[in-house]
Length: 82
Image 1 (cartoon, rainbow, N blue to C red):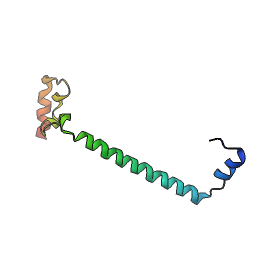
Image 2: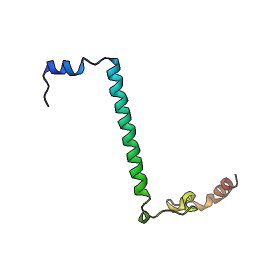
Image 3: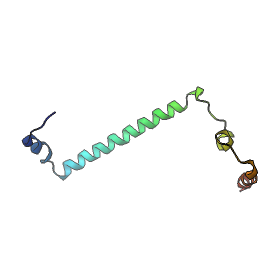
Image 4: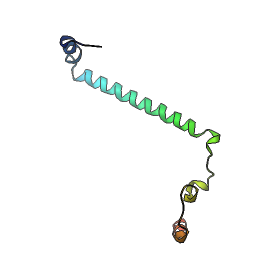
């Protein structure tokens, strides 16, 4: 859409502070709504059973995802005691 200079002035320079605040509040509401919908969709996707859910004990076990230096295993045991 091509706007000539006069229509630009009519569309964008006639807003007062309250109109601009209203547009910004509307944009904020839309942004929050999209974030909630996106988060809900992500949560639903992660709950799909074939995505190999971890057991409760595996959630805090680093060796599931990384190679663990077992020479430092005493640190892990010490942290678990705290």
